[in-house]
Amino acid sequence: MEFFDAIKNRRSIRSYRKQDLTQDLISKLVAAARMAPSAGNAQPWAFIIAKENRTKQALAQAAYNQRWLEAASVVFVVCADMKRAEESYGERGKTLYALQDTSAAIENILLTATSLGLGGCWMGAFREEEVGKIIKAPPHMRPVALIPIGYPNESPPPRSRRPHSEVVLIESF
Image 1 (cartoon, rainbow, N blue to C red):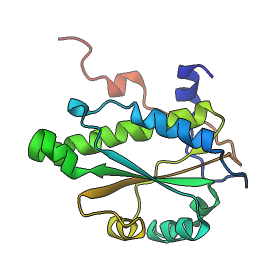
Image 2 (cartoon, helix red, strand yellow):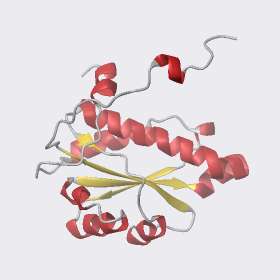
Image 3 (cartoon, rainbow, N blue to C red):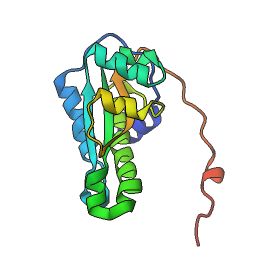
């Protein structure tokens, strides 16, 4: 799939076929995430990959009972290593750059999943402290998103996007 096609075709998928991902596919998703840009190359991310049903069930409960994520082959719990970001850039690294960098890694996962014929969804609605306990995260590791990934069992239509004139406020100075 061409890169721009992956951008255009990416959808939030919430229904998955019962089919496991190969370790090769999981490795490709992690490799793509690791290639994301980061401030000062700090790479303040960590990826916990939940495969076990009971772990996915606990994550679904922590995500306000969004049970559909249990059907995904895997759930990436993407975390920001606040300590690593703070060591590089102080408070701004901890409070902003870690989240920006982690978000770039998340988008790489989602676009790569699309390019591989997989589907995923960026989930931010969850009880952060509860997810931290489920994955046994140390205090400096902040769960930023849950990313269920699997073979799509749906093909949602494209959602509308704001026109160019609404998102570009000034084209030149």
